[in-house]
Every structure is written in structure tokens, then in C-alpha cells.
Image 1 (cartoon, rainbow, N blue to C red):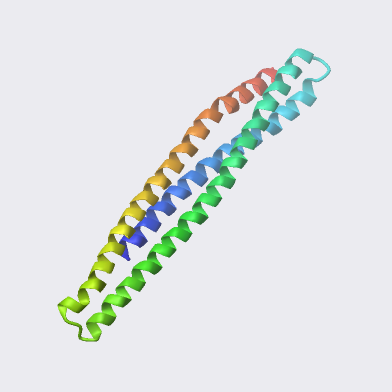
Image 2 (cartoon, rainbow, N blue to C red; image 1 turned 135 degrees about the vertical axis):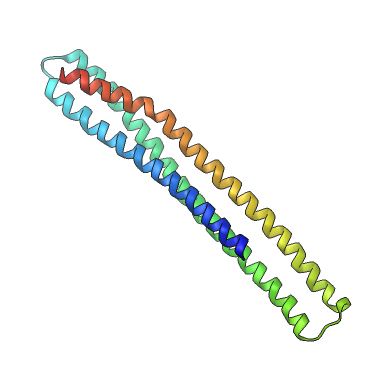
Amino acid sequence: MVRNTRAKQVRSESDRRSKAELDRMRKDLERSKNDLRLAQRVIANDHPDRTAELKRLQGQVDGGLAQLRVREQGLVREQAAAVSKLESLGNELRASEGIFADSLAAGASTEEAMPAVSLLQENLKGTHDAIAASLNDSSRREQSVVEIARDLEPIVVAAHRGVTEAQE
């Protein structure tokens, strides 16, 4: 159970980092979107070329926000599935431990307790493998979030540059 609890903690930390990165990027994109809209209104009549460029950047920001929303929704679904899987593993492990404890409490001989020990051993190995896979999945999800943020960063920079140029 300690391993299962530790897996939940590691997964939770990874999920928190992923969520924080997505939140940061969403805020940056939303701020860029608002800044672009304001800059478009301010220069609309005087600089039609810059307004067109700002509209193009606005489209990129909107696309980035849509991509981020899809990833956030996927992350929520993946997190819920992972939590459910870990809870299921915990229940299976507790059931196996119960069977083993019952056989010992009943005064079973070593030979009689062997099926319970084998079941417990199989479940422990399965739990270990599932937890390792779960942690790997969590790490992959976190990495994909970092990649999305890295891919969207140039959009934020370009939007900021466009707004700055429009204000000059």
C-alpha cells in the first residue's frame, strides 16, 4: 500500500505541474488575445496593414487556445482514468491480502496457504507493473504538456511583438 500511495503522490505532483503549465500558457494566450483586440481597435483606421497582421496573430492565438482546451480536457479524462485504475489496484491488493490473512488465521498449513501466497505474489507483481506503467504514463503526459507549451510560446511572443509594434 505504501507503493500505491507513493505512486499517487508522484502522479499528483506530475499532474499539478502539467496543470500549472497549461494554466500559465492559457493565461498568456488569453492576455495576448485581449491585447491584440485592443491594439486592433486602437489602430484600425490609421494602419490597415498592421490591423491585418494583428488579425492574423489573433487567429493563431485563438487556435492555440483551442488546442490548449482540447489538451486540458484530455488531461482531465486521463487523470480520472488513472485514479480509477490505482483505486482498483488497491482494492485487488487488499482483497489478496485478506485472503492470505484469512488462510493464516484459519491455521492453514504451508501447503494449504500456498494458493493464497501465489495469488498475493501475482497481485503484487501486477500492482507493481501497473504502478510503473501509470507513472510512465504520467511522465509522458507531463512531457506532452511541456511540448504543447513550447509549441505555443512563439505565438505568445509574436502576439506580444505585434501589440508592441502597434503601440509604437
